[in-house]
Each structure stands twice: as structure tokens, then as C-alpha cells.
Length: 138
Image (cartoon, rainbow, N blue to C red; front, side, top):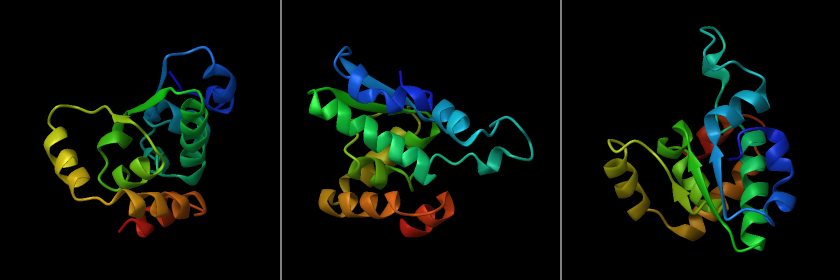
């Protein structure tokens, strides 16, 4: 489980030892941005589309795929309609979400173009904030 930045940074080494990676985006976001997602004044700033989170996801996916391993995403980000094209463009293999979110995300994915998702993901990695990423995928 990739839930802390240190694990994501070590993904190239860890990928040699695991069967797959599951990225827990709620904890990864909290620990990367140093924002308590339960804090009433700060929780809105804990956005999994922050470029630092996307860079960690990208690094993890690349490392896993180099070793023939798959990567799943769990947490709120997996069902976020703004995040889905970016995650697909980064090469994420699986999205784990509540059963109530599946129909909407499934319909969204069916309407996406993979090449476009890859282009959006690369642009998102160059953004300077989560709000810039959200504006990009608008």
C-alpha cells in the first residue's frame, strides 16, 4: 500500500518485491501536503489533484509498470470525475470506489479517449496547484 511519500519515492525498489501497488490517495494526500483532512479549516485544501500527489502517483505507476506490476487507486480520488481522466492518463490500472460511484465513473470512462487522457495528465503534472489541475480538466 502506497500511503506515504516515502513509499512512493521508493516505488522503483519496492516494485521488485510486490505483486501490485494500491495507492491510498486519502492518506498520501494528507501526508504529502501535511494537511489534516479532518481539520475543519484545512480539509478543503487537501486535494488529491495537487501536482505533488500526481507526481508521486506517476512515479509509482512508472516503477510498477517497468516491473510488470499493476497499480490500483483507492480513496476519494478514484471516484472524483475531475481526477478520472488524469489517473487514466497516468496509466493507473484500477480504480477502487464505493459501489454507488461505479455507474457514473464507468459511463465517464467509456466516453474518454486514452490519448487525450495522457495529454491531460502530462499537462497536469506541470501545473502549480490543485486548482490549476481542476481548471485544466474542466
